[in-house]
Length: 348
Ligand code: KG4
Ligand code: ZN
Image (cartoon, rainbow, N blue to C red; front, top):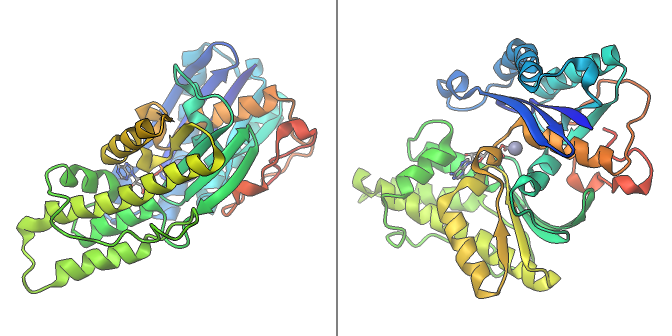
């Protein structure tokens, strides 16, 4: 079963072909970082236009590299949400149009499901069930994952997502876009113990998070009269440590509560080295293991969408015959149901 995957939910244009037994046959990824950098953040209209410009090129290139024609494909999976409405519509239109032309199904995929399942592509994939910590620019969630499509939300952020907190704090510190990786790089040179920032909701007794107060705490420190630019790396490190401490503590508590010993970390913030170090150490203490996607699969890409689509098809899901270009900029992951339930699960 060969599935073409298309990702265009934000500022990355990703295309890939996944084959059930052989894995990833070809992939292409274009990041729009340079395009948005001058504005200090993603400009939705520019993102859509760039997806339009590049998607047909990358699709052709990926098919050529895989040695395939559109007629060889079994399905086309695309990110139908959550994400930027215009950007999602580009991927949805291309996918639905190609599928119609080829007479094959187009499969709307939930972006977070793509992230969530991407560690299954690693050499030593985790077995179901596991706990997933989803930490991206738009979401921070802890989930119990029983199977593809069987997700129980344990807790989530009440305000900013972890990646969003990194990005906003980076802005406060005068760093460029994308802020998360830049702040992480700066933090490597800093002393995390210098500033005692709050650990929001650490002892809330549930699996929810709150990160918006943390950026205010950073702003307060940086606005004090005795603030000196030479503390910048220390403040970055102190902020990063506060986020990492809360994420790790709650992830471990989720393992304890569910009795599971496998933690999957997905989403852009999963690339953070300090987070990985802390999670690995904390998991080792309770005899648990942490699974990460390959570094190139941590941020947005077409592979995870092709893979998630293939997983659903292999479990018997069949998209409705009705062709429609629908996207869901806001799409709660909890609305997905297991494909084995025998009906079209991911209808947007
Ligand atoms: O999953 P992703 O690529 O896109 C979304 O679906 O949101 O995540 C992007 C987020 C951004 O907020 C970015 O700043 C953050 O992940 N990020 C990081 C790191 N790399 C990416 N945050 C902290 N440390 C990193 N190394
Ligand atoms: Zn993402």
